[in-house]
Amino acid sequence: MRLLCLDIGNSRIKAAVFDNGQYESGISFSQDDDLRIIQITFEQWILDKNIKHIGVSNVGIKENERLSFLTEFSECVLWEIHPKTQLPFYNLYKTPETLGMDRLCGIAGAYLSYPNQPLLVIDAGTAITYDFMNERNEYLGGAITPGMSLKFKVLNQYTAKLPLVNFNENFPFIGQTTEDSIRTGVQSSSISEMEGMVSRYQAICVKPLKVILTGGDAFFFSSHVNFEHELDPNLVLKGIDFLVRYGIQ
Image 1 (tube, rainbow, N blue to C red):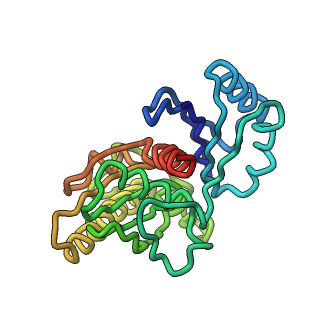
Image 2 (cartoon, helix red, strand yellow):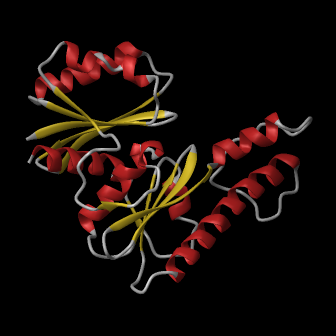
């Protein structure tokens, strides 16, 4: 069975086709991309790959209307991940109705590969989310912090003279210009924050903690943090596919 899976985030729309659980092909769009281009791409995939089911994790609320065409021209069944979606693990989050479904799908993707062990999924995007599951397959929740792009914007928008600085892979340890000082402050503090958070989660685990990095900034963090981890840019999409197939069975 082939599935078209959509991860609709705050800044990007990521999509992938899975064939019986195996990643086949993927693409990513910006929220600002022309809707017609997105529509043509998905229509072609649905027709060419004989797709009958579409799985969606949506934290970009406005996309509900923009993507309504997915089922208008085809016989596809739309499976939107929601707080009452059937899960193969225990969800102990106290307010499941407020939980971002991308977070739930990320932990589902991690559980798929690593059941019965403590897991920490770090999704580094517009926001950086930390999601923890213990060795009893109980999802407990985690933390949400501003991502690097948000930190850059806040420093510009809430000060009188600080400029808007862009991310740069190569940043100095000591900033000798205002732009470099902002860049090294934002990027270095984000790295240190992540390392500190991982250390605190590991401290409450009896077994070794499995850490998985995903999200748009995951490649940057993967090359700079000093803790063991796995890099999986398609983790949320894998979780969507897994939860849809689990619900269909």
